[in-house]
Image (cartoon, rainbow, N blue to C red; front, side, top):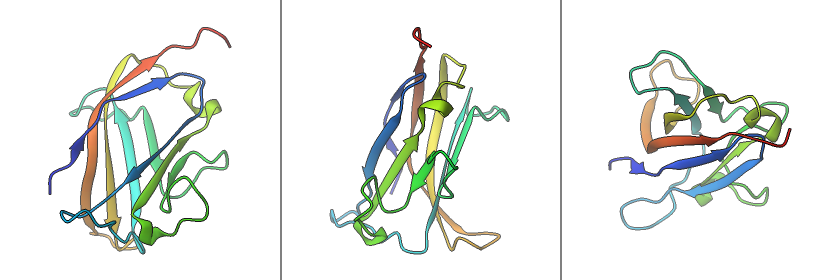
Length: 131
């Protein structure tokens, strides 16, 4: 199955919190137990520069990808991925346009895990005026 395409619009200095429901071709939630996730923003697909990197290991401010969605009562069997970027992290972003993709992988501790790209697209940053 190919990755979904979805443009992201980020408002600098705000909290970004959204949920992705990953389903199989029959419309059933994919069990994400034992999976990790990673997401990167780069200036271009070819660029080695990373503007923002999120993983399923959450930062102290909560920035990262929650493998049970945005709500703490969901389990990884729900197929939900919660993407969270704290306002203090988004305030440090400094670009106009970029690209991103979001991948899941398993097993987590493998040197060569099975990787599935589930989402990709352009990112546009709206610069903050009130600081």
